[in-house]
Amino acid sequence: MAEEKTKTALLREELMYEPKGVKALSAEEIADADAFCEGYKQFLNASPVEREAVAYTVAAAEAAGFVPFDPEGSYQAGDKIYLVNRGKAVALAVIGKNGVKKGARLAIAHIDSPRIDLKPNPLYESNNLALFKTHYYGGLKKYQWTAIPLTLHGVVVKLDGTRVDVKWGDEENESCFCVTDLLPHLAQEQVTKPMAKAFTGEDLNVLVGSRPYAEAEDEKELVKLNVMAILNEKYGITEGDFLSAELCLTPSFKAKDIGFDRSMIGGYGHDDKVCAYPALMAALNAKDVEQTCVTYLTDKEEIGSDGNTGMQSDFLRYFIYDLAKLDGVEGYRALSQSTCLSADVNAAFDPTYASAFEAKNSCYLNGGVVISKYTGHGGKYDTSDASAEFMGAVRSMLEENGVQWQIGELGRVDLGGGGTIAKYVANMNVDVIDLGVPVLSMHAPFEIVSKTDVYMAYRAFFSFFMQE
Ligand code: MN
Ligand code: MN
Image (cartoon, rainbow, N blue to C red):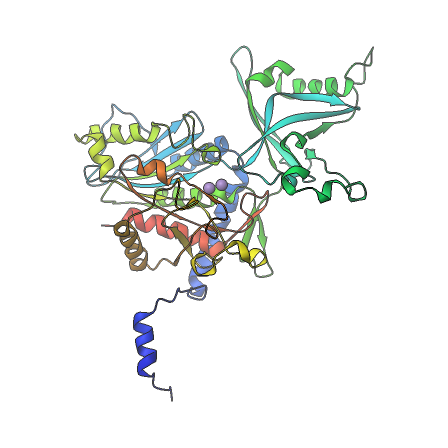
């Protein structure tokens, strides 16, 4: 016979808040999460850089019946449209029964990730080795990018205006590239330096060749010449074409299941493809929506959201204005009634680095999708601090739809901090809150997420879109 609960126990149950933790999911939900993540791994492998994520998104959207947006066109409830910004950002919209007259529902994730970009004039030869000079993109711990295989992705625009897509190092038997590190035997000076000084940005030189050009009549820079000959044969480019190029080095390893229980995924670029993919899938699966639903995948978040493909550009604002015009309402009125889930990752509590976190307000792997009321640093600077009202609405929406969720701050107060695109969305007079997936080893070449958290992110975006 079950023991009767004491009055104190009942009161405790009624009044105290217990986060649901990691044990609340059914076997069916876990199986759904595992299946969902097979698609996610494909997206992640196909999209190391933002242009590739856009291409993947457009192909998936077209297959699901989305068509390019025509500002002069006319649209009805249920129509599905997309609009690409310069090949690096993309908005998908499912037109709602009310259009944007009562505002739009926005889910916004970023599809750029920390990486190593080539400098405009990258190629040089030193001591019979050919190397690339680089300039890192986003917040890196530079030592993590040494001694791992790297691939080269991006575009080169030639003097005649033609564009060449570059992709080297992904295939199993294709060569790749590497930043070298100093052997421990000779690193007695290096290992006693502070981490930031032991390996600097100018040390991120990438090894790309070592054999001299074979048919040479002199001995000048033959290893470099040989590399250029190979690139010219494959892509038709010359050294000057590097000046008008965007070439990025990213880890060459594919996404892998992690753990004996296969509960996690390790891979490059979870931040923030792990929110972009669920937001994309929510747009593809949303139907009969009340308000127009927009998934926007933006660029440049890792370097401050500046630039015309970043969240600070007017691209999304103008897209909403165009939709509002079709509905016969002012764009600013549509925006001021809109709501947004800023879909970005948060740092999962890591027991190895427990002192960096405050346990009661951290998010945990397998705890579900994480809501961050604010991000920022040093006393809530540089953030959109979501209102209690909007926080309350999102909390109710998640509970009503059975979405596993948790609350999370980014680490302990005054240790550091970070931001998301939420504050730029808030500047458009939109109610916005951060909601995304907890990540271990964030910004490392190989980041880790939990499969059920990825699936809960999808459930959160889908429920948000499908609200009455
Ligand atoms: Mn992010
Ligand atoms: Mn980031």
